[in-house]
Image (tube, rainbow, N blue to C red; front, side):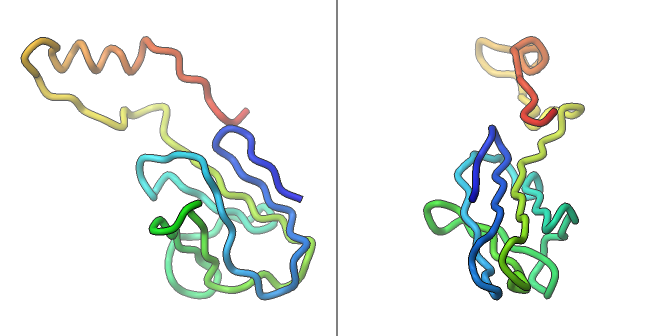
Length: 116
């Protein structure tokens, strides 16, 4: 069973051991914003055993684990975690809008947080 809520995809695996690839469809700006949890333990991004890679040249995008899951009934969570404290974009002055005008939009427009 799997489900997606906002920018979080939770996969409760029923597949056989050794599965390494898990898809997700939510948007993100930087790969660094993608977090992966294996049975509630956060994994690091990398290419060795116990780490994960973000594969973006396929549709839908996928996460590839460095080590396959040990058995069925494992919880894999793929989450986007973008900082709410620092802006993702720093605008420069343009012809009509100033950088200050655009920066203010980041803090005045509604931006619901995906996680509670």
